[in-house]
Length: 65
Image (cartoon, rainbow, N blue to C red; front, side):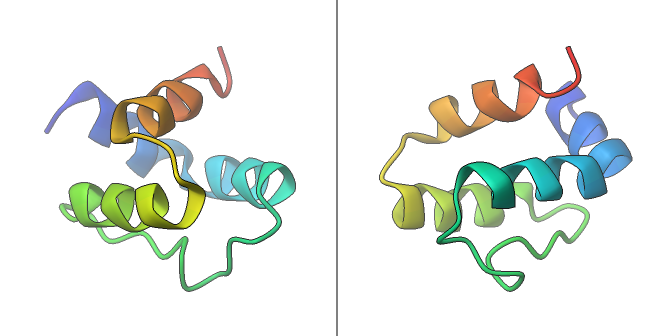
């Protein structure tokens, strides 16, 4: 498991709440987390937000730092 996956898995509720605050257009369905399916979730977020996967990963990594 990658460092990113570990962070997402361990802090998902906090990350989800901050993403909903920052991006009001995201729904609970958009932010459903399944262990091992981080790439699928990032792809969906990429489409919804018009950002790159790396931008989304950096934003998530910045939460709590």
